[in-house]
Length: 135
Image (cartoon, rainbow, N blue to C red; front, side):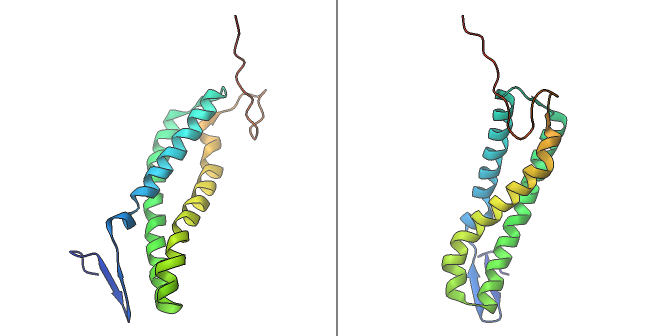
């Protein structure tokens, strides 16, 4: 790996890793989805456990970086063992979104119940909307 040019070469496969490949889009997408989901829960009347949510957010950012590293690694593996053209075109275009969606679903499934306080009257799977008084 050449750190000055972000070139990765393995056997006869060489890959240029540009700034967009660094995972900033995945980090922004994760942060947006994370806070939107918590704000939606709060709007629906749930109480957010910020002592759990904030550390969970930073853990999620770290894990998104790991997922992005796995994405780059998988592109390299596909380029070496399957097809260079497939690796840098179709596979490259879809693997990032696929891994991020899969990660976010698993992450929320495991940590979301710990981040919100559910009243006994509300069912967890389908949040009940807040009752708003009209004058």
